[in-house]
Length: 221
Image 1 (cartoon, rainbow, N blue to C red):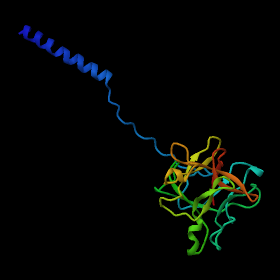
Image 2 (cartoon, helix red, strand yellow):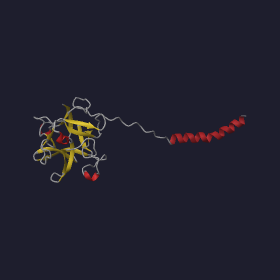
Image 3 (tube, rainbow, N blue to C red):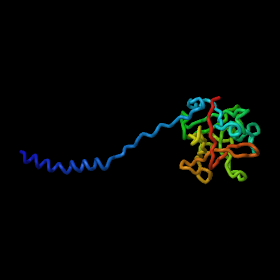
Image 4 (cartoon, one colour):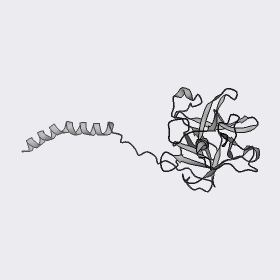
């Protein structure tokens, strides 16, 4: 009887050793949970609400500051509604035009696609001229200017993202769902471009930039 048990143990020994070796050296990596998306916060520390309106304010002071507003561009297409996205030359004086952030989901998170719309009354004929988009390449300024005339929830040029700034506040990114050659400024891993400011006819206009993106905060109206 003892001899049989001894032989049985000898037979099982290689299996135990193999099993131990396989377990220690060939671990199966189970997928870890994806990090929860971070909500975008306003100046009061509250999560942005798709049903609320906000002013986009620069973090700078004086000439470095100034709210974002809806203004008349040189080639306006709608006579009843301005169609350019600008920034005031100073944080002193006029307040910016309120906007709504319209996410693809129910909440407004960092680094997720959304549409931006100036929240102003308008006639039905020109309602699209409150929705942000990016225009064609401007040969004189060598960039693509932000304008209105976009659409909501469509795969055109009207998608943006809000991301944390490397300095303070947030940056806006333009992230189109279009072929890459249509956006020469979209060069990062996520096919997005930074939104900054250029000077057009003495006014500060939002546009796509390679460096120095506009650092902003969101103030509930």
